[in-house]
Image 1 (cartoon, rainbow, N blue to C red):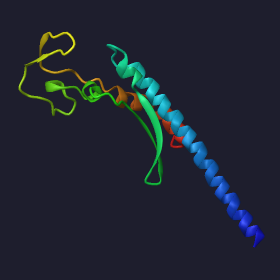
Image 2 (cartoon, one colour):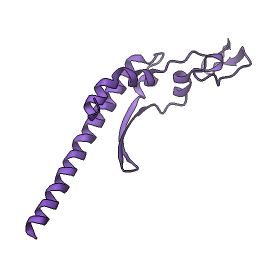
Image 3 (cartoon, helix red, strand yellow):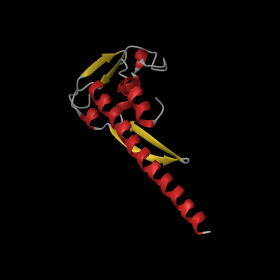
Image 4 (cartoon, one colour):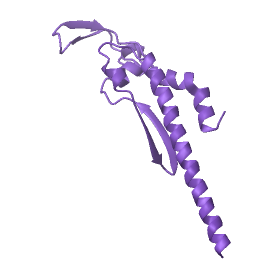
Amino acid sequence: MANEIEFEKSVDDAVKEYEKRFRKNMQTAADLVANKAKQNVGVQTGALRADIKTEVVDENDEIVGRVGNTLEYAIYHHQGTGIHAANGDGRKDVPWVYKDPKSGNFYKTSGAKANPYLRDAVQSERTKVERLLGGG
């Protein structure tokens, strides 16, 4: 009986140690992708680059790493707008005019080209991430 209890405890301890290492590797993988994304993102004020964040969470009994932005305009920078939208789902009635809230100037545009800095970062770091997480 004592040996069985010791065995079960050792298995539980091994699982906890594995999860701890995997979580650490997931954070390292997320950081790799975030650092590459920061190199790829276009910079005007630096706010978008500074806003690239990582997190590691438990989701549906899995350890998940996330990399992304919280700024409202990040999606437009990443996916593009208007006729340049990445999935072709942008505004089609082009060109249009908008007023810059900072300068008060009016601008005519047909949209902004996509800069998929997050997707590109994942693709360029894929081999390193797979190695870290045991898939490569």
